[in-house]
Amino acid sequence: MVKVLVVGSGGREHTLVWKIAQSPKVDQIYSAPGNPGMKNIATCVNISVDDIKGLADFAEENSVDLTLVGPEAPLVAGIVDEFENRGLGIFGPGKKAAQIEGSKVFSKNLMKKYKIPTGDYRVFEKAQDAIDYINISDVPLVVKAEGLAAGKGVIIAQDRDEAKAAVESIMIDRAFGKSGNRIIIEEYLEGPEVTVLAFCDGKVAVPMVSSRDHKRIFDDNKGPNTGGMGAVSPAPAYSAELSEVVEKNIIQRTVNAMANEGKPFKGILYTGLMLTKAGPKVLEYNCRFGDPETQVVIPRLKTDLIDIVKAVIKGNLIHTEIEWKEETAVCVVMASDGYPGHYEIGKPIKGLEEAEQKGSIVFHAGTAVKNDAIVTSGGRVLGVTALGKEIHDARQKAYEAISQIHFEGMHYRKDIGQ
Image: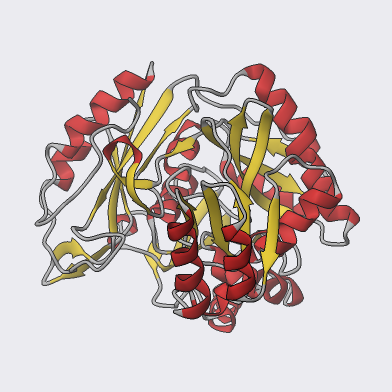
């Protein structure tokens, strides 16, 4: 029997804990720091995701067999290297490989070198150079902070003034701290967006079912970008033919490129794609499960996740059969009023049990316990996921469940899966 530690406290980690709890091979699940939604299936341990030494000490002292890391920050900081140096089993890329998300400059240069289709780009270290470039460029443009910015470091600028304001925000006002030391200005790509997550063992990549994230805060894709306001799986525009092209020309080519660079990629490769008229192009890579994409992809996974994780760690993914449910999935994120800007916390949440009785799964993303009641503690509070024969069936079930939930100032999009 296996003891598992899941690092993180959001909806993605709750989904992983929920799936791992279904494995007959697992007898103990810990989550650090975890959240109240996990309390019936995991032991929550009060260790921060940034406390790499503390997490490794805990895994050692409690004979943890496998650790899965949800968030990007500890991966980019080298948690996998620390665990592996101590002989502890861990799922995820090492520090060198995690650069694929930690440095957008690294990933764009990698794509250019290995002819992986992506948008044209320029890298800038000085704000004035970037502004001079904007003055002579066509708009819209995409302005990106190089480093980690919790999903908020990408600004789509419709005109030159917006682009210049984005540069000033990142490089002069330091909106994302050191992550904005360098920026990338990219051509604006058009088409449907698709996310493809893949299990990778350093040599082989096995794509999962596709998904589509809804990043903007308001209906009809209006308002600022967020960490994600909902997701659907499969992505409506993603055909079997496109899937073959992406697997061969993008995902496997990326894994080959990383191996060639001496940075073999093991774990989850997240590829954000734009399906342009010229074919699929990479918008971004992440080095971990997406959030909220995980909340629609993992509930469709039939195979025991522990078997896949072990195969990745051992480097024999090629011999692992991975099966998926035919059903579609929809996840709607319920957020705090004011998110992605300033929001209040500590609002009591009612109706969680009633929502689950409607046949949906309620994944906790930003919740806490106060005076024996579950309250809000983050910008994204809950992810309500439902499965159905078609997208509209799953969508209807998810919104029926949401109608049972209430907290002061709650906000959610009404058009996820339309």
